[in-house]
Image (cartoon, rainbow, N blue to C red; front, side, top):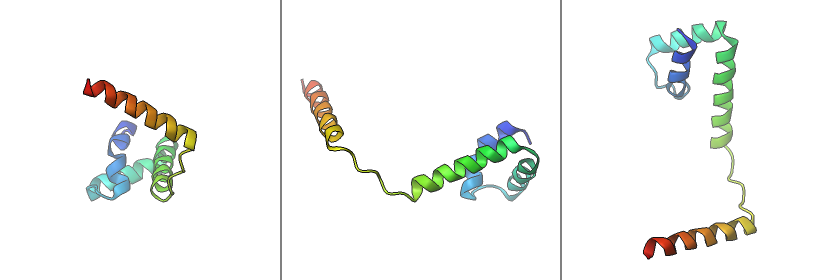
Length: 79
């Protein structure tokens, strides 16, 4: 299996929604390819952090600027 195939299948691999034969091929490849191990490990950690963390509060000044920008955009759309 080539690296590009591992990268194409990474989502299904991490979600465990992959054919067992393909999973075995990926795992064999990961034993030999440090670059792909890093990609898979980093992707898994990123997903874990994203899924298991609380959203950061939006600073009030950013909230205000966002609200103003949305109101301005809505005014343009209505005209």
